[in-house]
Length: 83
Image (tube, rainbow, N blue to C red; front, top):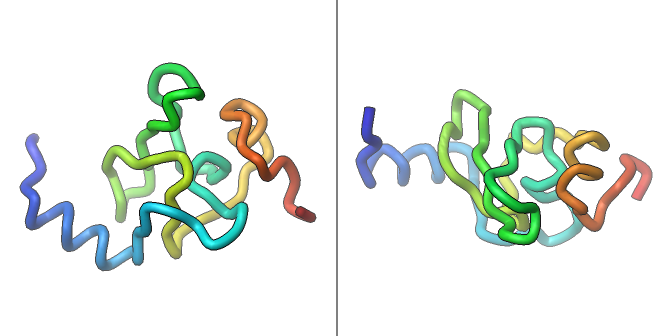
């Protein structure tokens, strides 16, 4: 079902979604990020039920949960939890 702008805006606000991160904690190294197309495009889908929308790789939200597998697959600058 199509998502309205109002619904997407409410989700964005509820999860504190930002179009860039202040560090290397980014969507493209989060366990909920599903890459769409080539990693170079930096576009993916957030599979978290509270987000459930297309996101940019360098974006961030408060539901972030690091995944080394996703980070390696996307070529994210952060490759380990200790960085």
